[in-house]
Image 1 (cartoon, rainbow, N blue to C red):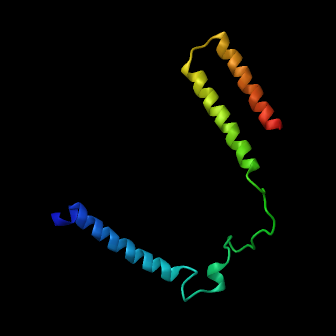
Image 2: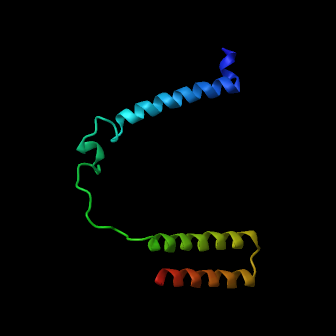
Image 3: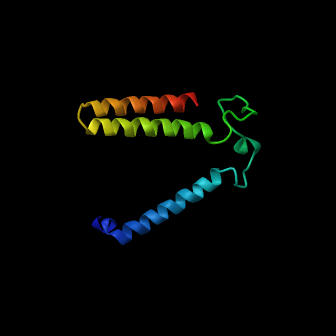
Length: 104
């Protein structure tokens, strides 16, 4: 039983397992010979998919990502220092930057 713990043997066992799972997945996928319109259609709880794009492009994502980056890094900088007038000025600057980002 200890032989399956030897790295080359375990690798070969896992390689065989991955091969079997890949073959099983290929049979279940939409690209198999059993393809049907149901397999290639979008499933959304029985509802038809929307015909319009909710948020085109990546701009909304980047605004949100920049907001959280400024917020988290700013708080990390504030948390690593001590309470001082400079920290208060930094906090006010952080709030102004976040308001400018939110308001566009």
